[in-house]
Length: 210
Image 1 (tube, rainbow, N blue to C red):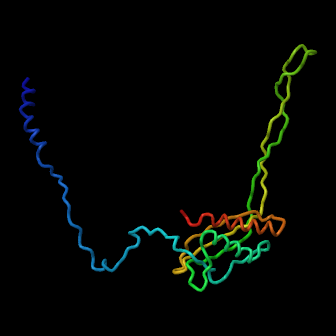
Image 2 (cartoon, rainbow, N blue to C red):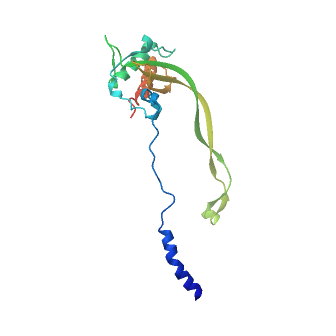
Image 3 (tube, rainbow, N blue to C red):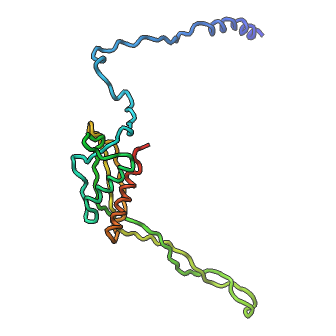
């Protein structure tokens, strides 16, 4: 009983201590003044890069005034015509008597790729199966069957890779680039030219980037 009376007597002091001021008080202090050279210094890393406005690019010309080269199965004129047609489809026109907005470079090369084809071969195996007939007194268990075995064949193919690069004509900075490929084992020149145009169209399909 005395213990309980002691606790009740000390309770007001405990509550008063809880309601006292908190020794850990947050206080704000002003920032130190900026150094004098900060007024003339711009820290570009402190700000995100502005989004590029691709809508202002309207015209183009070949970088260094050099059309793209060609290969054995793709003449320079074919690649230049294919790139020019793809740029036109994306609203980019050749610059005439005025500075271009974009500088364009393109090249085509042959590369080798490994392709894998999965086939299925059927190898016999033996196992139980029902057989028989009326002469055998009904169906009975026998042995036989088959199973499919996957066979992976690896072979090498030659592909034609087209790469297109776009540069800002004002500062020479790269703006956009892409590449695409198609099979180079075409028989006729018309088929090879069609494959070249298909590769250029695939490469330009991502312009302008979303």
